[in-house]
Length: 334
Image (cartoon, rainbow, N blue to C red):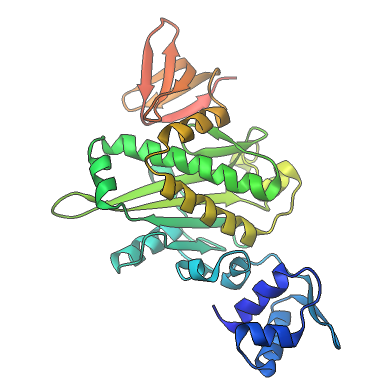
């Protein structure tokens, strides 16, 4: 981290004034370097007060999403595997490119804006600047994990990881705004009946062995949008953390919480499957509801009754037939 980043972290986490001498000593830099970094932070929009013999205090910082802001909440060693971009075509695409160049396990790419955001089934994902958080996490399975993955169909692994991710993301959102989102199977987060987030998991396999080499887990979260900011065709369905909770949260803090939650999720994988399944069921907004499930080759009207051990949705049709759904689009029948 740069001197500027470190000083922002110190001031952001300080309870009151911090002397220039203390900052200089902690970072091993000159007082002139401290003064220059403070000036640069002020140019970025930070209101930093200074009083002789007391030092500096951060009165206000704008809601910016960059490495300086995120680094205030993340351990400097962990930040070595975090990239925060002003704009990118897609954080998933960027992370896949970095993975091909050898990016390490746990590498994160976040962005303030995506110009080509991706949703499921090739759909676009609106990713305007300054209002959301767009985040991708690289998972490189160990050899033991690869053996675990090989025992299952790729579709089951996809449903499982995406479901775990939904629980981890709900943890992060709850920590920053105080309200826990519900999960609509398999990969959407909802608050007050409005979608605030979607998840896209992409697996990349070795050309010859077909082993899963890397898994990129992407999530987009609407943070600051108001209803009028959404396109008319989705305005009655879409929401944001601000519109649904009234909380104007710090996006950099949410990014840091996502890093912590995803790190824990990967550390728990796959041994804590039942714990995550129980939590997923508790968060589900579908179980017990009448739904319409659109699957390859058929559409069913049924009741959602549970989530099985492989995170497939269990549905029961009117004639009592039970199915375990691994993929498809599901909507609640009103």
